[in-house]
Structures are given as C-alpha cells and as structure tokens.
Amino acid sequence: MVRLRLWWCSFLITFTVFFQQLRICSCWNEETPTPPLPILPLPTYSQIKWQQREIIMFLHFGVNTFTDREWGTGQENPAIFNPTRLNTTQWATVAADAGVSLMILTAKHHDGFCLWPSKYTDHSVIRSPWQGGKGDVVRDFVNAATAQGIDVGIYLSPWDRHDHRYGNDLLYNQYYLAQLQELLKKYQNVREIWFDGAKGAKAKNMSYYFSDWFSMVKELQSSINIFSDAGPDVRWVGEETGSAGYTCWSTINRTSLSIGNSSITKYLSSGDPKGTHWLPAECDVSIRPGWFWHKSESPKRLSELLNIYYNSVGRNCVLLLNVPPNKSGLITDVDAQRLKEFRSAINTIFQHNLAEDCFVKVSSQRGGFGAENMLDSDHLWSYWAPKDDGGEKDHWIEIRAKDGNFLRFNVISIQEAIGLGQRIKRHQIYADDKLIVKATTVGYKRLHRLDEGEVQARVVRITIRESKAVPLISSIGLYFDPF
Image (cartoon, rainbow, N blue to C red; front, side, top):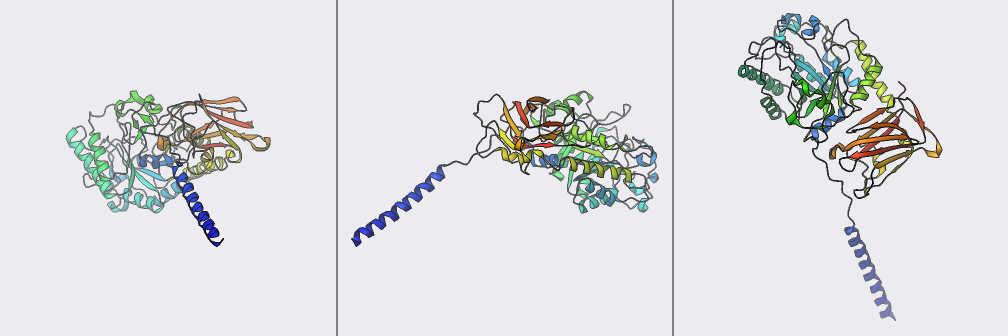
C-alpha cells in the first residue's frame, strides 16, 4: 500500500510538470500581433519631432525695423541699428508663454546686414552703436532660447542687396558658404535653417549652389531640418497667409520642385499622394500685416489666428508665426498679449475630448491594435488598425454617447500614425446618419471646424472611403470651440 501511494504521488508530480511544460510550449506558439507594413516614404526622426511642435515662431529683426521697410536696399548705414532695450530673454519668455518650442531668427535678411559679428563683412552689428559694436544678437538669442528650453533656427537670406559679390556665382557662393559655416560652427544645436528664393524682379542674375549649401549644413549639424521650396526636410506651403491646401500630403516628388519657381505653388500646397519623398509643409504668416515691425500696424485678431491654426496645423502642417520685435528690441505688449490669448484659446478648445466619455466601436480590429489606442496620450505609435483581410469596402469608427445623451461639439480631430506613412485619401463624417464632413487627407492632424456651427448628436461615425493601405488612426476627438 505504501509503495502504491508513493507511485501515485510520483505520477501526479510527473503529470503536473508535464502539463505545465505543455502550457509553456503552447504559449510560445502564440504569436504576438505585429504592426502593419509601412507605406513609403516615411518621415525621419527629426521630421517627426518638427511635426509635433505644431506652432513655431519667426522673428524678423534688423535694419528694416528702423527704416520702416519690408525689403531693405542694402545701402543702409549700420549705425541706424540701435535697439535701446534689446532683451532676447523677453522674446523667449513670450514664446514659452505661447507654447512655442522653436524660434527662428533672421540672422541676415535681403539687405545683407548681419546680426552677428561676421568676419567676412563689416556690414553688421560691428559697425552699430549697439553695445559699442561688440554685440551679438544671434548669440544673445541662442542663449536666451536655450535657457527657456526652446530650440533655435536661423534664416540666412540668399539674396544679398549689399555685398558686391552678389551676381558673381563663384565669389558669392563662396561668401555665402563661409557665413553658413561661421554660423553653424559658432552656434550649436540649430534645429531648422531657412532658405528661400525671394528676390526682386530687377535683382542680378545669380545661381545659388543649393546642393553645396545643403550638404554643408548636414555635415556641420546633421539633426537640422532644412526648409526651402524644395526641402530637403521641410517644404514651403506655397503662400504666406498661413493656409495649406484642403488636400495636403506630406509626400511629394522633389524632382518636380525648384527653389523660387512660382509655377509650383499649387503643387507645394497639396503635395502628392504618389510622392517619392517625405517633405511636409510649413505655413508661414505674420501676426501683423508686415514681416518687420511697423508702428502703424496692429496684430491680427484672435479669430483670425484661430482660422490660421485650423487651416495650417489642422491641415497636416506646422504653423510658422512671425512675431517681429520693435525698435527698442522688444516684442510689443499687444503682440505678446495676443499670443497668450491664442495659446489660451487653443488650450480651452482642446482641453476636453468628448470621445473619451463615449463608447467607441470600429469596423474591425487587427490583434493588439484596438480602438482604445485612439484615446490614449500617444498620438504617434499607439493606433487602431483594422484587419488586413476584412474585405470591407470602407473602414469606420463609431463614437456613441453613453446613456442616450447628446454630444455637443463643433470640432472633430483625426490623426494618422504617420510613423508608418500617410495613407488616407478620402474620409467622411456623419452625425446621426447625416453627412457633416466630406474631406480628403488627414496626415499628422486633421481638424474639422464645422461650418454649420454647433452639432448635437448621439452617434458620430468617421468613415474612411479610400486609403493607400489599411488606415492607422492614432487619435480621434470631439471638441467644442466657444470662440
């Protein structure tokens, strides 16, 4: 009997161990769901970080500030540049209060006057009475921004109305490259550099060696995003009202672009669904009518700035908002206050996502990529993915109010997981089966502010009508804009 009991105990132990091992083997055979394949082209790490900024700031400052001009002649006496209260810390504080994480300064505008003591020209702060000719606006700007945790960018105008070498391709390109090297070796951690093709109709003929410039930039500071009409990292949106195309792809064919070509503005605005390069658009606009400060001008109304936000950030772009310092070297109080109002309004509009309090249903779900991912705080790598083999004509998301209540909203937000490419070509939105939005692209962020104003509905359905591959939605939102 004792032997029988021992044998039985031994059998139970062996069976238990075998069963546990079988369970472990079974678990090993269960595959963790993998993400869908990306749709090329894809953004770089620096381009994603740039897109997440949403709003950045431009600062046009120089001799034009003192001459009441937009384009200087190049013949200005550097002595006119004499800001009596220049305070770059105030600039950075204004930017920080507005939620801005990147500021771009006009180190040199078309007039050729340099805001740093360049060793390649004396048409600079060296010949200014400001700080006895020993000042450096660019250095002060970089230090102040860095102290506030704000990144910096630089604009170095290709068109130079002062330098005698302009018009001689070899000599001027050597001069420009020398200043480019000077800036990027002297001031570190530049995150964006601005190039454009702006010049007057009567300007001398000049061939810019853009390829050489771009290569030098990447050699000196590889993490910089280069902006121009043709990228290579960020493209101009094609106009200066702060509005992108209603259809706006981050993809485009760079071979179809050239800097300073006015015939491609529509293409720049819309992008290209078949584009071979990831080249997102930046919308530049000034808070005032002019780019430089003018005493006779006032900042845009809050309602105008909000329209610009919806038409830029809300159309898959980054908004570059120019805020020019005045003659004393400060951002005027009225501009600073308008920026605070702008940031406060954005925070108010998007502080409460009504969709978070609703039931969310989807047409299908790829394992591990459920609807809950659209309502978390990660708007890039956490997303809903429908099944590849669902066979559906359309993919959809249904947001249903709890307890039969009505949802009251006038703004709808959709975001794609752009880390795996931009996909959506057409989408529609219904409120209680009534069509309220018929639109095209989404991209990093699409904001629909409803033309009919406030909507009350129990069920909101977002339907993806056409996509380059299964849509990957990282965020959805219903909001109320009281402004």
